[in-house]
Length: 294
Image 1 (tube, rainbow, N blue to C red):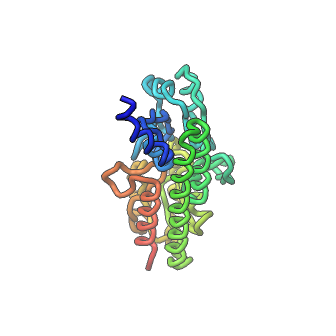
Image 2: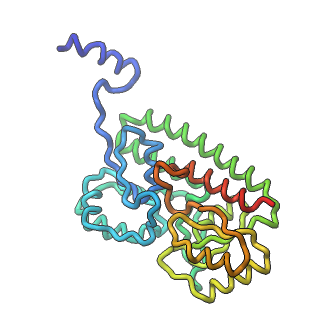
Image 3: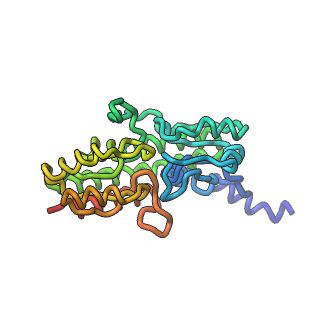
């Protein structure tokens, strides 16, 4: 038996990988964008279970008992933080488990938004690609701490993914710079693009706040319609996690065109054009460019 195993043991030593199957690290990610980031870094050394899946809205997620069981089975629970997952503390308590909680956004410079007359932290930090480079490093550090034997694997994946993110950031900046400055204004249905606006020089206007739980008031909608008319804002965009009727109303009453779908808080399903974080951002920039170029 040892004679039969010897070649495999030798190959394992030669390439620095075990000669037996590695048990994947069980990881729970709070929502689909984070689930993709974990997959990019962890590859087949992790088993990723995402609580709020593709095309779903984490703002209105209502955990079920089965979700507590999913956390109980995890070694790591990776969340965005910045108040995005208001339900996470009670879900961890309900799980009865002791997974390590990892906040992916640690180390970023958070943006604040004025909502209902109060300043609140905007949790949508992933809309600035430079922040996602920090997310990826935090995720890699957590995986290495939980699975030291895979350190080289995680570091190599991080280096590859970070280079892809740097190229994506450059691509977005190049695309936005080609749009005339006076046309870099759009309306979206909730304020999920504040970090994108600050990073890339686009003005985003939204009738809802940073959470989709709040209803847009008639007064806010009327104000935005007036602003769209007076400033000749080119387009109103739909979002993949929002009821499209509000955007359609603003477009109909203001005369702005309906732009394509923007991905704000979730990636698409695998057979759609935004099934990863990078594909999501590329899809958004295509739609923005198509709508805003004269």
